[in-house]
Image 1 (spheres, rainbow, N blue to C red):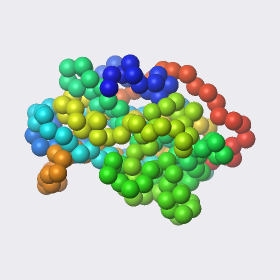
Image 2 (cartoon, helix red, strand yellow):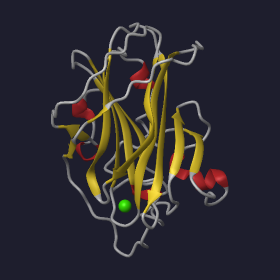
Image 3 (cartoon, protein in one colour):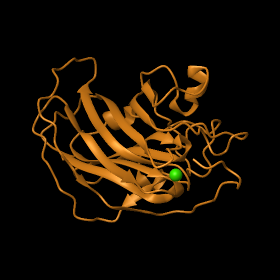
Length: 246
Ligand SMILES: [Ca+2]
C-alpha cells in the first residue's frame, strides 16, 4: 500500500520533527514500548500524541506476527472510549513503502450511536488472530464493561475519516500487511482524542513483532522512545450535537 491510497481524512502525517531514534539490533523480532507512562491525551485534538521508533538489523523476507498493546486511563471526569482514534504506521528504511493498521476508530460508533461507547478507559492488546472486533466490544461482552476494557481484540481496521467511522464501515487496515513488509525502518504508534468531553492519559504501550509460527523468548530490552509531534491533515466533520458529556 502506498500512502497515496490511504484516505486523507484517516491519516495523520508527521511533519518531520526531530524524533529520538533507537536502533534495534535483534534479528528475530522486537518488542518496543513503555510502561508507567502518564501522558495526557489532548481533548478534542486530532494532533494527538505519538511514539516513533526505528528498527534495523531485522531479518528481511520472512513474515512477522504483530501485536500492539495500548492503555489509556481516565482523567478528570472520565474518558469516553468512543472519542479515540489510534493507528500503527510502518515505513521502510528507504521510505519506499508505507502501511497503516487502524487499531481503534471511534469504537462503538454506529448509525444509532454516532458518538460511540461512553466507557471510560481501556487496557487492550490488538492482534489479527483475536476472535472479536474491538469496534463492537460491548456486543462481544454482552454489555458495558466494568472498569477498563481489557483483553485481546482484532484491530478496528476501518480506514476511514474518524468522523465518518461506523460499525458498518469496511475493514481493511489490519496488522498483517505491516508484518509482511521489510521490518526495518520507522514505526509510529498514534492515538488521538477526537471529541470534546471525556479525557484520558496514555499509561502504557508496546509494539511486538515475532516471526510467524515461531516462538521467541521475551526480548530483554525495551527501548524508551521519544514523542513525535504530528499534525492533522484532512477534513473534519463534527458529529451530531447532543452527545452526553464524557
Ligand atoms: Ca474527549
